[in-house]
Length: 102
Image (cartoon, rainbow, N blue to C red; front, side, top):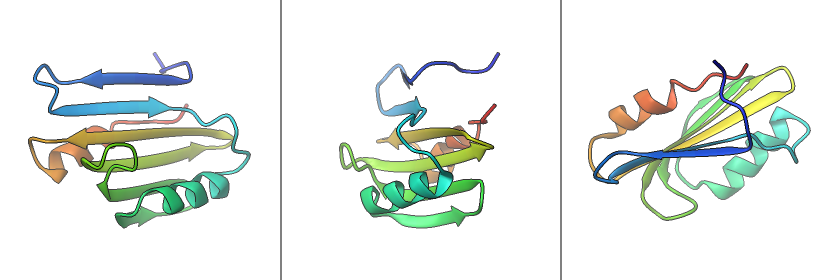
């Protein structure tokens, strides 16, 4: 089933890895999502297409290493931020890339 709601949070048992998924209702276009993310997240943009944005670097919320991913499917936008204190950026990237907009 597709994830529904405004925000969802999950963490590993040791709380060293967490993922927050959200849906920005206040943004009308994916360009709005992209612009807001690029001004908020100061990491390295690793993917930037018409339907996907991925940024790796410190979390804008807590400064922890993170992978931020935004995806679009028409007018539906989904965001995920995976913060990690253990594991690698590759592990966080794999988690972030499981997100799908439906």
